[in-house]
Image (cartoon, rainbow, N blue to C red; front, side, top):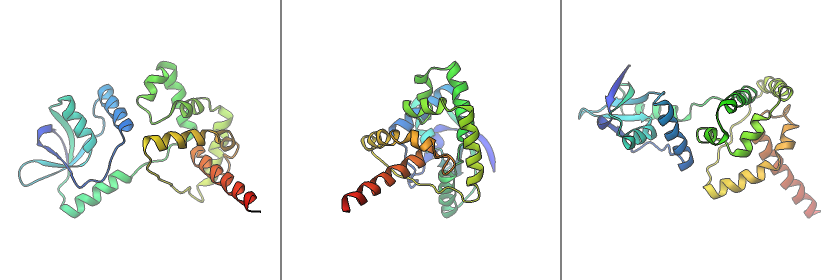
Amino acid sequence: MEIINLRVDRLRPAEWNPNRMEPISMARLKESIRRFGVVSNLVVRPLSDGEFEVLSGNHRLGLLKESGEATAPCVVVDLGDAQARLLAQALNRIQGDDDLGLRAELVRDVLKELGQEEVLSLLPESAESLAALSSLGQEDMAEYLRAFEGSQAARLKHFNAQLTPEQQEVVEKVLSRFNNQAQERLRENPNIRGASIFLLCLDYLERNHTENE
């Protein structure tokens, strides 16, 4: 494996890669590249015609071409078709979980120097969730950390859903109504969004049960 700068015109996007990015996320990625440059290497493999196929970083490649960049930092791996696809899927799926307490502290520090609009252009937050996150106090953080430690024995499960922008707007509006209750249940689930979804479902079941009686 080697890391080199390759000409953008020698890089070919992987047409088979299923990873897609919503327009709002693409805009944030574009702003990040404009502000900080490419801080994460593309992962590519050599092809027989002298070009390289991008296994990870197809969205970054598109934005680099759009902005007229000549080269991109790349990690070169020599893999066959099956292994290349496996690696691409692994890289698409490997994600860490934020520690909410530390993330809140980081956001507060950032907001001291940058305006909310500027922060929202880079982070995947709504204005409401950013405000809630930045207002999370030290006692809340300590409570969260205790809950987080307690949750390690039984890891929280991931729940993924894909929504249209219109659907996401409705979901975010509804979930925001449960944020205060979710804050009170940090011991059960330190993930506020996850707890809000649970409370929404619980509310539906209770209402449905009452109507059926």
